Image (tube, rainbow, N blue to C red; front, side, top):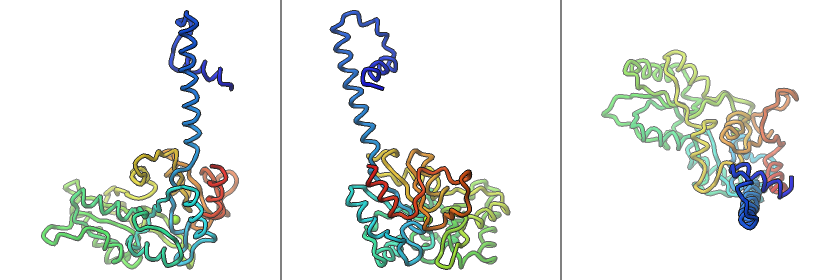
Length: 308
Ligand SMILES: [Mg+2]
């Protein structure tokens, strides 16, 4: 489609009947304005195509336990040198942001602590905002990111994150009792920091907190409030001011929680094969409908750099 067609389309889009412009000069001026509009719009849409911000998942994407994924340390540097801002978005609830930050630095990544945006921090904000006094099913380390309990008030809610050594009958039953005893008031809250099904650990895939959240819901009838990925609230609140969703990509190893969740609000979602995503479990027909599937984080960076 040529520029003159674009101008005609502008007339149609803004519903100006062309026969109103009886005087050629007026029509000429109007067309010039319309051309300028088209040029601005074209420039604007080209600018939209470049990536300004990459939201990057951590576990399974940049690292697996204490091992960076292939080429990830260098690739992150290249992405920054290309002028793309980064934010590390994680559902990791086993570690506090401080511990995570130290660990990533130790294995070679260059980052600032405030570049990590985690569902744990988002959940802490939620607890404060709603003045909850929860029973925490969290690791002791993750617990340090959360508001302290108020000993003078009764426990009124349950917060669940990935806490392998707390997922035993004793602690789950305690959580069940809190929810069951408070549910008659109608305002008891079951807060799931996320509902991950599983994740990739050093020794293979491992069970996430999702099934424990679902189990508590099943036994008490209390619907969970979910904070982390893939919820729209989480992705939107990760965006800095002035960055639009279409200028942002999400890179992760979880087709649903990372990629499809971000794509639902208009970002691109790039999937990597270094974590929990197992390509052999899919066929051509049922492969996740993400914006792109890449072997490693480094391959995604290459794609972003070469395609704008
Ligand atoms: Mg991950």
